[in-house]
Each structure stands twice: as structure tokens, then as C-alpha cells.
Amino acid sequence: MSKIAIVSDTDASLPTELAAKHNVRLVPIIIHFGDESLLTDADINDEQLFDRVDRDGVLPTTSAPSPGAFSEAFQSAFDEGAESVICINVSAEISATYGAAVAAADMHTEEDITVIDSRSLSMAQGYTVLAAAEAAARGAAKEEVIAAAMQIRDRAHLYAALSTLKYLAMSGRVGYLAAGMANLFNVKPILTMQEGKLEMLERVRTQKKAWARVIELVKESTGDRKIERLSIIHVRALEDAQNFKEQLCAEVGCPDEILVTELTPGLSVHSGAGLVGAAYLVEAEN
Image 1 (cartoon, rainbow, N blue to C red):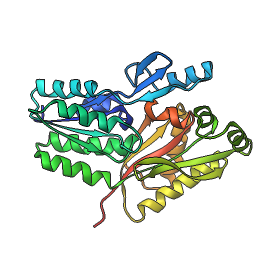
Image 2: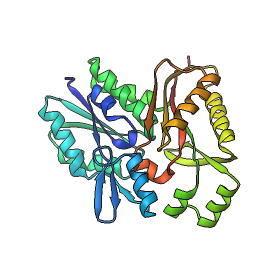
Image 3: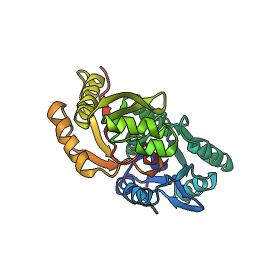
């Protein structure tokens, strides 16, 4: 294995098999239904999460992994022969995960650990993680691995459309009356990353127009540059995700390999079921 181990968290939306392929250790975000705590990916996925939410009518809460969980991941890497660890986490603007990883690193005073705030989430974070893992696999030095990750961080984008405000109303982020009115008029909010947060960019009427607007935003963000990597993200909406992928690639030059992946429960609990969008990496400017 590489002498540099890469660790992240499940808010990167990396499928477990892809993370394993690149030797990335994912520390799970925790989902709480009352006194019951479930680990993202290991115990619960988006489908299972919203089956339970729709059945019980209650949204769970989420929490960052403990410093101990990160410490275990770090120690596992060192036990397997790593000489240093680079841990890339979901934006500190939306989660205490980065702080937990920093606290864990402080427990390992005799070992070489670098913790990085990705300032992003989902596959925008995931592409930063993969860039680090690929550089480490090539035998790059630690500073080069970090530079590869940071360079990717500035070229990653994400746009997504919600299908309903029902779940935001359940979370208390919008009122039930406002959500009901929005759903009555078929309003579809569009989300994007802004300064490390997933923010509501604008509201569009109808799903068709929302998808068209997301595609337009992708075009605007790429300009004359190519999309190097592309993921279609969704929350319990695989068929919609496949349809959106076809529409997007009919309008935008897409890479040969396109990942279709779940947002994952640590994030989807906030967006709700039905979200569909694109996370992508734009080639560097000349």
C-alpha cells in the first residue's frame, strides 16, 4: 500500500466500493432516530432512511463522528504500514466533522496526520478525496498529495434541484404553510455550494424547468472548459437521476464515465427525498 493513507467521511458521497478501490477509509456520519444511532452506509442508506421517515413521520438528527472514530481510522492506517495520514473532511461550515478529525489528530502526537477542510460536500468533496488518493497511489510526496487535493477543491461544482419542501418543513427549516404553498405551486428550489455551505440559490416552477435551470447553471460554470469528472447525485430517485443524466449529456459534453450515486444520509436528511443534481470537476484554466 501507499505510505500515505487517505481518510474522509461519508458526507463525501463516495460509494463504498469506489472508496475501497482507492484505499480511502470513510468514517461514517451518525444518524439518530431517538435513542437509536445508525452509521451511514454501514447501517442505513438514503432509501432506508426515507422509508422510515415516511412511515414514522419524523426526521432523524445527525451528528459528526466522534474523535475516537477518526482515531481508530488513523491507527488502522498506521498499523497497516502508512507513514502519514491525510484526512479530508466535509466543510466545517456545515458539520463538526472536521473538528472531530482535528481532535483525533491531536491524540496522535507521535504520528504524521494532516486534516483538511474540503470547504465542500458530496462528490465535490469526493473528487478532492479521490485526487489525493490517486496522487498517493502514484507515490507522490505528502506535500504533492495535499497540493493535488487543494487544486481539485477549487474546480469542483455542485447544483441540485429539490423535488419538495416537505422534508425541510419537517426539519423546521421552512414553515409548513410556506412548504405547502410552494408544493401547491410546484416550486422546486435549486441548491448549490456557497462558501462551504449547501445553500438555496433560487426557486423554479416545475421539475422540468428546475432540471433545465440546473443544466443551464452547469453550462455557465464550465464556459469553454471541459467537464473532467461527473457524478449525478440523487436521494431515493434513481430513475429520475438516470433521466436527468440523459438530459444533461444531451446539452453538455460529458465524460465517458459518469457516476450515479446517493447523496448519503448525513446530507440527505436535510435535503429530503427526490433531490437530483450534478457534482462535477471542470478542467483547469490554461
